[in-house]
Length: 132
Image (cartoon, rainbow, N blue to C red; front, side):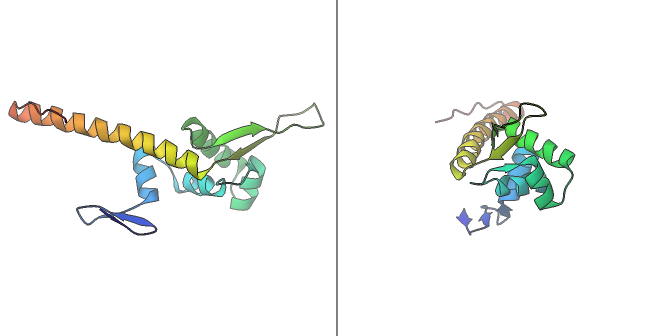
């Protein structure tokens, strides 16, 4: 496999972008990925993201909850001098957090694919394949 700055060339010759990878593995939308990159080493609120991207707060909130649930971003509660009203949160991520999350999940995925291949081969041929 060879790699350029923005894509990975697979043995088949197909080129895979980061968006292709996360869309396949996590069902990310382009908006999810855009928000993830905006939060890279930069703390932002839901309102900041909504204004900057020109999207509704509901759309941004859905994306943030998805990214948060998958462990790609961190949410922190802002301390306010006012004790009334809804709490305000900031969101951010780091390169290390993204790499760690992707690496762990891709390793799990690779193991699941190996097991799946073995099951299919065993069912079709009756041969059992031992993993090294």
